Image (tube, rainbow, N blue to C red; front, side):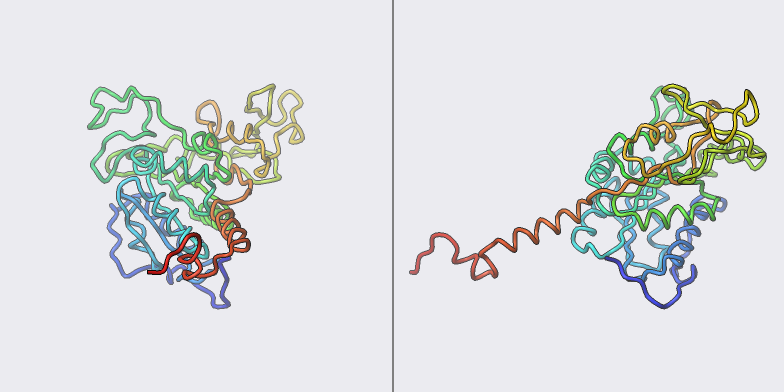
Length: 339
């Protein structure tokens, strides 16, 4: 397991000497700040971290971290991160990826990393556009979006990342917003401490090719009424006046107002992030404005055996029963001849 040190790190200790080359105002700056803050608060030796990425604006992040890193090729970050973790399970592996890198060319690697429950942390920057390649629509772009590759509006139905994760038997899914350093820091720390594949969707703004894509839920004046920050064990309450909530009515979630029709806090759903049955988590992950508030925070966190843990256990069991203890035993095993 990853050990802790008595030395206390600061966020500055995780900043590399490389110039940060994202566009001014890009949401990636906030994500980087939150990650560096989370790393410092986790107080894990820097040499135990590895940041892996594929291709895209998000994939520049390993250059800006004063840790080990690997900049891979398009869509293959999950495969590389898997290899790193299996080769050295003591490392804490972080995969930095975007909605195009992870869900288009990298979609198959993504769902199988989640399904296998490999102990890696996957941060998925979702700006609903291809930013690095100059503004083509992505697997999460909203239907009807006009882009360079959909001049009359895309006719495709977009992925909802949370639903995709849970559909692949994901054990940890959380969501945050690029500018929200406090919430993001806590989410990244929880993801790091989770044993298994943790997926964090970050609602991120691309100021050049999809500016304001998340404004309807992130605008300072209205965000409290259009998002809900989930806390395990707490009633699902939201709103600028903390007067709204989520109930379960039949098989559907329902937005209600406290005080109306005799509704009290006791009538609201209490968030259970550790519930093995993913039904409620799936509905929470799929909530979207204007019908519902968008769920932020840790939506699901249910630990199970990890792929790397099972692999190590299998190796130990096989070695304990094997008569072969060295290479010489292997060469002399079975039929041999002297010439």
